[in-house]
Image (cartoon, rainbow, N blue to C red; front, side, top):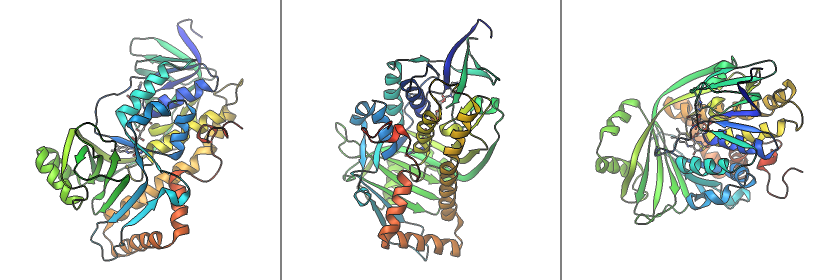
Length: 407
Ligand SMILES: Cc1cc2nc3c(=O)[nH]c(=O)nc-3n(C[C@H](O)[C@H](O)[C@H](O)COP(=O)(O)OP(=O)(O)OC[C@H]3O[C@@H](n4cnc5c(N)ncnc54)[C@H](O)[C@@H]3O)c2cc1C
C-alpha cells in the first residue's frame, strides 16, 4: 500500500440522498467512513415523496426532526384514468388509514432533503466528509482505491457506489447494465394554487404518461402548494418549456381539470428525459452499488429513492462488525437481499408506463379492469398499498420502528 493513500473502513462516493444516508448509517454502525461528493443544492423543481420505511430510516439516523418543517403529508394517493380509453375506471383512492398508517409518507424538495442530510453528515462521529469529485477508481484484492480531482488518493476495504445513474464506480467494478429509454420527458415545476390539496396526491394517467400533483407545505403568501411531475412526448415537452409562466399555468390547470383552481409557477422548471437502468450485479471487487447507481426508472408511484434507501438499510445489516466489510460473503448477502425488490419495482413501473403508452385495446382493457378491481376489492387494494410502501420479507434494522430497532 502506498503511503500517500489515506485509508478508512468504507468509502462512500456520491453525496446525493442515498450516499448521505449510507455514510451516516454505516458510521453509526461503528465503521470508519469517508464520504466523497459535493451535495447538489441547486433548485431543480424536483421533490421526493418519502414513504413510511424511509421515514423510519431517517428517524433512526436522528435526522427526521430536521426534515419535518419542510414535509407535506401524503394521506391519500388518488389515481385518475384520463386516457380516454373505452375501459376507463372511476378514480381510485388509496388511503393510508386502510393499512393502519397515519400517512403513506411525506413529500419534500430534493434540494432541502440533501441540504439537511449533508448538515447532519458533517456532524456525524466516525464520518469524514470530503466535498470533492472522484476521477478514478481501482478495485483491488485487499483494498479498493479512489483518486480525487486534486490527485489525493483514498483507500478502503469497501467502496459504496452512490454516484448515481452514470456511476463511475460501477464501471470500475466491471458491472454491466441493461439500459433502455422511453419516448417521454418529465417536466417538473413547483406550484402555488388557490385550493388546498388536503394531503392528497393525484396521479392523472394520460396517454403520454402520468401527470402527478404531490402536496407541498404552504409558506408565507402561498398557503397552498404542490409539486408537479408531468410526463409527456419529448416534442410537447420542448414546446411547453418555451411557454411563458402564465400560458404554462393555464395548460396545467386544463390538464388537472382545474383540481386546485388557479395555479402559479414558482421558481425554475426541470426537464428529465425518461429512461431505465438495471445493474446486472449489485457488488463486485469490493464495490457495492446503492441507489440510482444500481437501478433507475420513471418517477411513477414514488419508488426510486425509497428503493435506494432500502439498499442502504440492507447494506448496513449485511456487513458484520469486526470483519472485513468488503468480504465476498457480506456482499453476496447484500445481493441476495436486494435483487427481488429491485427487479419487482423495475418491472412494475415499466409495465404501468408502457400500458399507458400502448393504446392497444386489450392492454387498455387489462389496465382498466385492474384499476376497477383495485377500487372495488378492499383486500386487493390493501395488498397493493402494503407492497408499494414496503416489500414483503424481513425489514432491515434501520427501517424498524424505534424500540424494535436492532433486536
Ligand atoms: C422528476 C423526478 C421525480 C422523482 N420523484 C421521486 C419520488 O417522489 N420518490 C422517490 O422515491 N424517488 C423519486 N425520484 C427518484 C429519485 O429522485 C432518485 O432515485 C434519487 O434522487 C437517487 O438518489 P441517489 O443518491 O442514488 O442518486 P443522485 O441523486 O443522482 O446522487 C448521486 C450523487 O453522486 C454524485 N456523483 C456522481 N459522480 C460522482 C463522482 N465521480 N464523484 C463524487 N460524486 C459523484 C452526484 O453529483 C450526486 O450528488 C424522482 C426522480 C425524478 C427525476
